[in-house]
Length: 431
RNA sequence: GCCGCGGUAGUAUAGCCCGGCCUAGUAUGCGGGCCUGUCGAGCCCGUGACCCGGGUUCAAAUCCCGGCCGCGGCGCCA
Image (cartoon, rainbow, N blue to C red; front, top):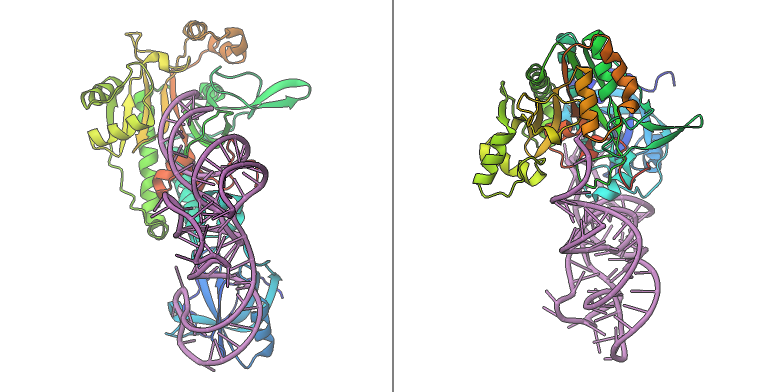
């Protein structure tokens, strides 16, 4: 056979009546009516029906041989027929079996029988063939393209920072050690310090790349390996980069609504447009509102997930910024406000979830050194970073966004794992 | 790590509270049969399961203890 396929299911229709085509995909289902047999062939875009009559012994034999999820190419002609789903079907002249799937399948791909989350991730490759899974990754891809285009439009360039790093970049979170030619190194927990250095030359940079955290976190929105969307922008403060962020997110939502409406419908998810500007509410006001509603909130501490759920209800917003966080709850590179208590920082919250966080960064070396010391970190360990602040660092600001978390909100998924092809968490290392 | 809930054929579930009538029901898958327009095709026959260990009892899927595993919530986490 010269070609595995000439047309995708999405490229076929009754208008191609009589055309010779080759379709390829997976055996989605078989229906045997005796004298008439229907083979439903699924590809990345959908399902086409292949109809087999009694007369062709070889095709009937192939039909009986085929198992669910086997891969085949079907050579045949398109026939418009109102009785067929979509108004057309394929009348085959030949069936080429590429790979025969074992039975029974460890997971139902067709969607008739549900599976537990654990089973689904154990059988992830089959799970990824389900309509819902394919819809999720289509949406995520549309969002990624939108994010990139919006950032390019604002003059950002895409960069890559090292993922093998020498030191615990910021003290805090636990790192995965790696053996590096006899020296100790770690998987990067964030591109933070390197993207700042890059903003010191390219001015507007972004990176979409993995980050690793060896945390004990065991929730539906934490992974030990996740994709972080990061920007850093020179001659900007947190107000400027909040504007960038809301534009990026609003653009992603808009594109998904336009380009992936079919997928949203399939997922039964109503994605509402984001109206700009997104509301800004200060941390202090958030705490006050929560306290007034009877919540117990420790002033100065991070807000918990239940707090964010409650806050979203109270202020009646799906999407909002919490700005001006207490300085002591933020990392050393965050610019404090003049009062010394709060900081030029923000979280971007969607429903109950922190999607992104960012800040104005400190660009003066003395202040960075002071802040490292205040947090019990040794400035010498940060010399690879601090050195460059002697040579003209611009004022700058930036943010980092969890791609899968954004994806949850775009798709209505309840777990970041759904947005991750092969998630890595405390327990899962395979597949 | 803490709290709650759970673990029954390949998959998903019923049964468990109130032990015996469970030879463990159903759906889907799988095997076989019927059917020339199915579209979650239908109908008939068949196939296959109580997480592991201990205990209570005449009797345990069911009650108790321990373990392992999972899910949800929280915590941890820039």
